[in-house]
Length: 87
Figure 1 (cartoon, rainbow, N blue to C red):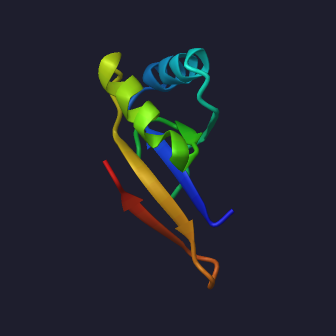
Figure 2: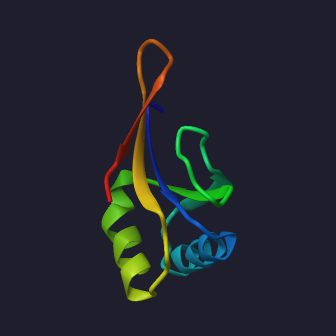
Figure 3: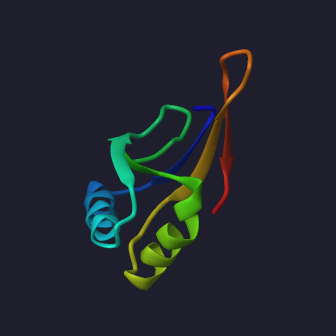
């Protein structure tokens, strides 16, 4: 996989809450350690598919879940990673 989409948080509480809300909404998401390329206060992030980006954003807004940012991480041919803050 050359791309992944991540929501990072300032609090583990918010990461766990979003994970639960996405599960209830039948959105495929994975809880994982925050990639080191993303500076965050919380060590847990949520990974999701690009196809679900609108559902993830709507879930964050509708449920007032605080988050630090939504990122696209792309693995480059030379093995390094490019991080883009997309929200």
